[in-house]
Image 1 (cartoon, rainbow, N blue to C red):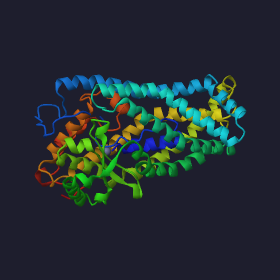
Image 2 (image 1 turned 90 degrees about the vertical axis):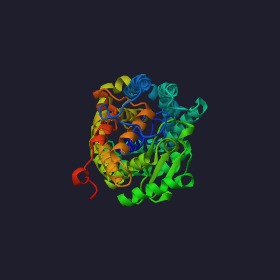
Image 3 (image 1 turned 45 degrees about the vertical axis):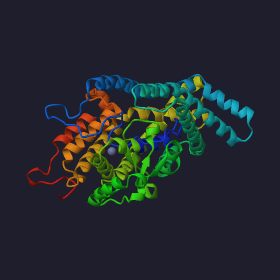
Image 4 (image 1 turned 120 degrees about the vertical axis):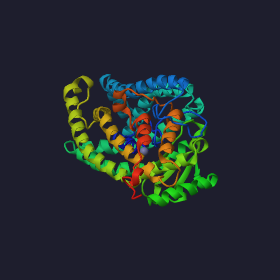
Length: 445
Ligand SMILES: [Zn+2]
């Protein structure tokens, strides 16, 4: 699971006040990308690259990944442009003025201001999301019809408003009450808010977008095999914490992930995965996900995030104040503590989020690599050939999502939360610590 991305997303949701449209899932599992295919372990001749695609799919993967990269980086820059426009065109200030003229209670003015702002930002983002969906449909990854897609967008917007507006009001209030030290308060509040959002996501948010049922209900045999992995890893993931998500209604992607924290912690498998991947490969993916828990990736990430956010909040408060000093007159924004001025803080946090993307992804890739090693070691002795199983599962994932077998190095550095499928498959092919009587890094045998 893209644990770092999950947490960053959760923190982005909180820290950036959920102004962006919430999409429900946490982009989990060994690889983000898809497409249907036959599922028998593919032979992997050692002379070739560990991950390869047939020529027609290779061409599709290259074309699709150009679109993905453009949308990913372009989308971040577009978000900054929109925020800048809202400030520079005085749209935010006018909106604030309008709410003051038309509504009496102060809380109602703030509520309307932030709700309308969230809607404006969602509308600005809609065309890019629609382009992404168009490409995904065209390349056979998404199978979701437009009415359903727009329904999800609407639900995402509703969630953003319901959660984002109160947080924005609260944060705005803190800035007003403590104009010099507010960034410390926001930082202190971010941890409980992140934890709360990770906790409630699988219980409240995810079911709004997808259907879940106990994995045992339809895949008792598979649950039995996963319990074998549980026995070897010593994790506490009982069958009632394993769920099947009906992803096939919307996607051809293959995926599995762990989510939640404390009593909401669970393992989720997309039904596309169980339909098209052999059980031993699912065991490998499950081992990978278990690795995130056993190796304490979530607490480590949270700790790192809190250290990082301290400096981010400090720097962004300075940047926001600098913006008000430099452009305040022109924008008619006279303090960060004003409602429109609060947008400068949001703008600064968005810049930080964009600039720090490669750093967050580097940390994420490190954890994902560790989880890959763990997953391969976890199935040792349970499947006939862990190397072959892992390599085959990466090929299934890569083919399903149409991952580029040879991505551009800079793009990989900037926007990949997981090592490329090629790197992962290549590592798996050569990882055999048991040769000559050795043992793995995380298991005694
Ligand atoms: Zn992972």
